[in-house]
Structure formats: C-alpha cells, structure tokens
Length: 250
Image (cartoon, rainbow, N blue to C red; front, side, top):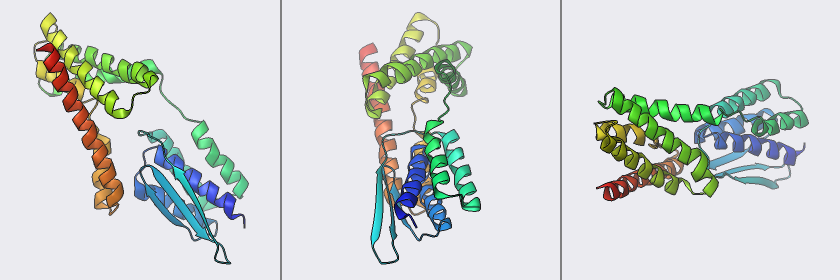
C-alpha cells in the first residue's frame, strides 16, 4: 500500500475543503472517511490555518502530512465540488492515481463570476440593506453608489496593493462612510444612517461569525475561538474606519 500517495491525496482534499471555507468538522470527517475507504485508520486534526493527517504503517511507523492553509474566504461552489467528489470516492473507491488526479483538478477548475457581476452584487446588496434600514429610494441609490466604491476598492485597489484583510476592511469602512457623507452633503440622499449602515453591511463578517458559533457548539473550541477573534478584528476595523471618516468629514 502506497501510504505516501494516500496521505497526499487525503491532505489535498482537506486543503481544498479548508480553502473553500468549510467547517472544521466537515474537513476532518471528509478526510477521515476518504482514507478509511482506502483501508487506512487515519488521525485528522484541523484548525482554520493548518491541517494535519497521520497514519501508522503495519510495522508501527507513523507517517504525517501537514498543510498550511493561507488566508481565504468562502467558496460555496468549490465546497460543493469537494463534497461531491469525496462522496464519489468513498462510494466507488477508484484507483489511487485516478482519485489523486480528480482531487488535484479541484483547485484548477475554480469558477468565479466576472468582476462586473461582482460589482453589481456589491451595489445591489448595499441598496437592499439601505432600504431595509429605513432609507428611501434616493438613499438606496446613494448606498448603491457607495457599494460600487467599496467593491472597487476590495476587488481592484486593495487586492493589488497587497493589504491584509484588516486594513482592507478599515479603508473600506472609511470609503463607505465618507461616500455616505458626500451623498448627503450633495443632496442625493437624506438618511445618512441608512446609507452608511447599508454600505457597511458589505464588510460585516456574518458568515465567519456564524461558522465560529457553530464550531464552538460542535466542540471545536480552538477553531471557533480563532474564527471569533478574526470576526472581532474585522468588526474593530469597521468601527475604526467609521470613526476616521466621521472625524475627517465632521
């Protein structure tokens, strides 16, 4: 039995699951089920930025693979493909070389929306939240323009400058609030709170915090606390950005 190939295969699947934003229990269970289907009895441990997979050979020699997970977001499409492939391999148990090739293709077939579609999404979300928080039609349109500015910063400028998530969020909050002030000052909108909050909702780490709470309730305390700390830092960056923009704009 080629333990090295099997471990590489299992750790690659776990890596792709982690990179897609999957919950810790899903990553550990998927890798465990996959390698168990191929006759191994693995030990799997994962936290948001690290995956460790280990097995013992028949003569008692341990073999371990560790993968460092870079900063990532959430990719539901990749997560769905990883889940589907894991179920297929557990059910059919394909040859290791063929299974490894299928897993390697997961990261190469990444599907993303065009940038103009993403910008429209930023705009539509900001408009919806502005209306949800009590803004009128003009306020919603103003929030949509602010959302376009925030989306442009995140997708173009911030990414190209190499800023980390904290500073991207902080500057995004400055842009959102400052643009809201300008819209009200120019008369395009009247409800500053609705415009600002509607745009700032684009930066709120709602999914990350929800995943963190779910992991804490599932018993993955380390992972849940790590994600919670990340969500708190993001909320802090939003708050600081708003304070800076209000200080600049009076």
